[in-house]
Image (cartoon, rainbow over all chains, first blue to last red; front, side, top):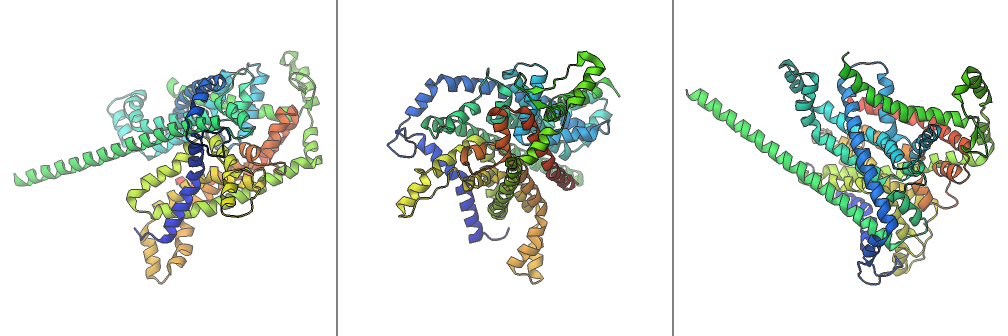
Length: 282
Length: 293
């Protein structure tokens, strides 16, 4: 690799400072004693206590978690099916429309998605609440899941699947016992992505929630409009902490898997070499 | 065609038709309706039980009045233009900051790269709302930026509730979308090419402009689309960081719908926004398909 110049060092330092400084400030000031968020008045964890006594936030958090769990799960099932159909399904009637509908939600402005779904729910007289948010979130999370899963399906060696079929497995069995284990990491990360996207969504939830259900982002948004508050800082710190923990754990696990794969490959090569030596010796 | 294959295709297909395509049809229909003081707040409403005459009567009542209204009131076309301008400038600034970062990441020692990549991905997973919120405390009049300026003996600046704050917000939140695709193309690039260019007499700077930059073009294009398209319809950033001078179409649509309760006009705004974005969306998909080949 080429040498590490001062230019690269500066770019990295400034780039990452820009990305992380706002979050670091947010976290530091969540431990501020004062209600005035911008004035430091000593260390305190009292805003975390306030947060856990705030019924509205707790209710909203519970709604959000349920919505995220169900949307991510349904979206993972449908998204994996869609990815499989797109990559392995061959030709079928309306394939172009299908792939367009899969990828369009990725770049569609949220205000349009939210508005169109709300108008649908109203025109079929569906009462708005947790159920309608789940329907809406499933639809846009599905797109992300199928992108993640289809990139994995494209990259893996198809001959393993064909071997299973040649050996007499039905397509369904081949999928369950060969394809699914191979694409499992992508399915899991698709689920996680869907879960965080749903957890985070404000715009689509605002349109589809109705007065009956309030999610955490809706709650945060309405209180942030009134200005910065130490409770929101505490809540943000908790959410950032959970995400950081999840991402670091996931990357450690995938690193461990890579190390194990490399070790297995090395062993296989060594075993092969020994076999060859023995074969030569005899 | 066995039953399993049909159901495998049909289930996600039906879901998307019902919850993605049909809703657009409804938006289109309501954009052709008239505002009314009723529930739902528009007329006409379709009553299929009336049979064919009812449907014909219903179609006869639809008109393009709301679209004519959008061209007459200059609020709307100014908002479209201003959204496009804000998105364009932000995309350019994001590229200026994102490219050196992606370049430095690709040139960093191999063993650092997974960690650096994780550091870019982490903010992407963190709540969008929270990352925008973090800037309110920094940019407000009594905020950390002005405290720092005062400490250095400089004049305070007004940034929050201006367009500058909106630019900062968009660049900050969308930076990972720019860095990741550029990094992906740079990382695949072979170091030999640069060496070859230098052996043939290029200075390092020339080698960058004539070899590295052209080869990273697919990543730049993907990154720019990923920032530009959602930024045009952005709502959260202009409503939290922008001020009265900030005119963005996502915010106009939101206010038309929630504050004025004028659903037909809000729907017409959405249809026009979609028409404006169709061109970049199609170009983006073309670029992605070319990449996969």
